[in-house]
Image (spheres, rainbow, N blue to C red):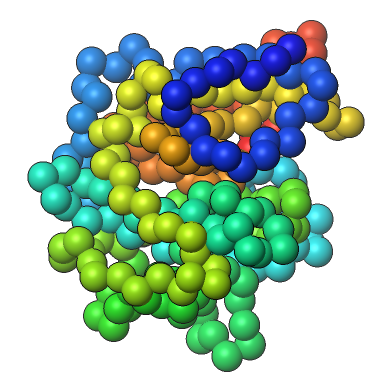
Amino acid sequence: MEAQKSQRGGIQVIPRPKSWRLGESSPWFESQNRKIEITQVVKALTNRVPSGIRGRIPTGEERDAAVLVCIYDEHEPHLILTRRSPNLSSHRHEVSFPGGRVEDSDFDLWATACRESNEEIGIKTEGLKPLGRLDPIVTVGSRSLIHPFVTILPERPDLDPNTSEVEKVIHVPMTELLLDEVWREEEWELPNGWVSITFFELEGDTVWGATALMIRQLLTLSLGLSDNYGRFPKEESKEGNKF
């Protein structure tokens, strides 16, 4: 099965297996409300703590990492994403939230998210406070347990990205992420069974994997929707994995 052609999407290589199929529609497909206000985000995320771990079941060998989900209001809520440099040894051109792995000098996971974000995109983190947290996600390739922290910025920030790590800083309106043409879910057949993969196809970039799961949860929480991602037919999988 060949991937569908689209004017949207990035140039990074998606490691699809030979056997895959299109998945389900977005959790907000039938929703009449396709707009998100900053007040909705604040209400949904204020003091939120993780309700579980997403992705694969952790083995205990994963390394902790933390990312900063920065949101600012400019007529509507925007997210700040980064496209990784093509000069890096892995994950070239991939889109993610700024952040990275914990270092011994970090006081806590919030400190990790702030330090890494400052190093990557030059964001000023003094005075920033965590609004709430999304669920941690276990990644397969990097063997990390990623802890996402949501924070509200007072305005669109002036950034100074580290060009050795970041090719581009991407500012994305949250409402754009709700468009039908942006959403895609695929189901891949892997050695452990079928897994569902979330994609957001932006103009010139593809968001997928752990970052897409974070965005998916952020959107559903902000809209007050439930999300059954990872659900598969009973005859094919007793328990779906989520990526």
